[in-house]
Image 1 (tube, rainbow, N blue to C red):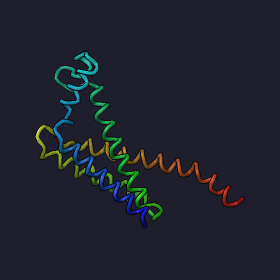
Image 2: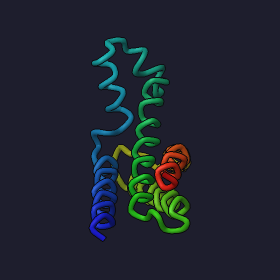
Image 3: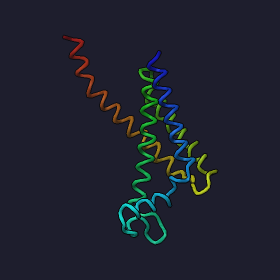
Length: 148
């Protein structure tokens, strides 16, 4: 029971972290571009003719993939070993992604994009697939211990 409480607490904390990133104007695409300009020192890498550079795009979308992948894994851990843990974990992450984008639509300087919800859901799916592969890899070792 304590294990579940810890995992659900981590889920709640991570949801608050995601909410904080959505709330803060510091994490807009324009600010990311400015930071990249300072770090790289070459304006062309951070902005290309008024649009986001490929590097800016990759960094921001990888952040989406990672954040919601972590959320899905945390929810999975909180639910495991219940039946449908993978499905419920992915669903939770995807629904939270949609509500996060909706929340961003009210924030100045932020945009809500359906494509970000899709990227978030893909991040959750990839993370859960990695968890599944890790569990499958560990299965033979557990079986060997039980037989011995």
